[in-house]
Amino acid sequence: MAGLGIDTSAVNNVASATTGSTENKNSLDKDAFLKLLVTQMQYQDPMEPTSNTEYMSQMAQFSSVEQMQNLTSTITSGQSMSLTGQYVILNVPDAVGNIDQVSGLVDYVTVQDGKTYFHIGDDYYPSEYLDSVVSMDYIEHLADKAKEENTAVDTDAATNEQAAENVGNE
Image 1 (cartoon, helix red, strand yellow):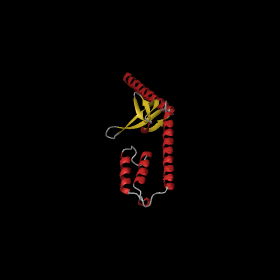
Image 2: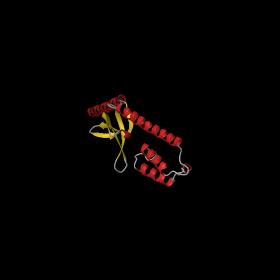
Image 3: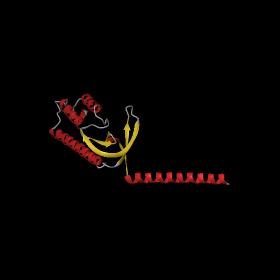
Image 4: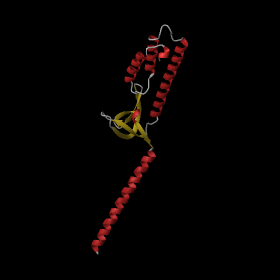
């Protein structure tokens, strides 16, 4: 950023302060982008000021980033809403970071403070924990298969009991 005539240490301080407070530490959000732009304006070299064209270009980039984030949020929320009535598997971290799998039928989906939550059983889970969506047909297939196996085991046990009685009667 030295080519733009700004103090890079000030920009680094702003960048580290803003990324430290965000959930996703791998990317800068729109607030960080604005803070960087303001810092750039604040610390520019008065002998070589940045042109209005460059500022307009950066504002256009900011606007594009903001619209992409809004679109992503809307799409994610819509996708989460469509999971009502679906059987899902979630990877839920505990207090120390261990992952527990929680599964169940999504009763309903709610949005609070811009975040989407699944209601499963008696609890709410952030949609970001979603791991898998399982077809109800597949769940029914597994239940039928388990019934068949239990019936086969019961039939085998009855056959073994009958054979034991026959041996005892001889």
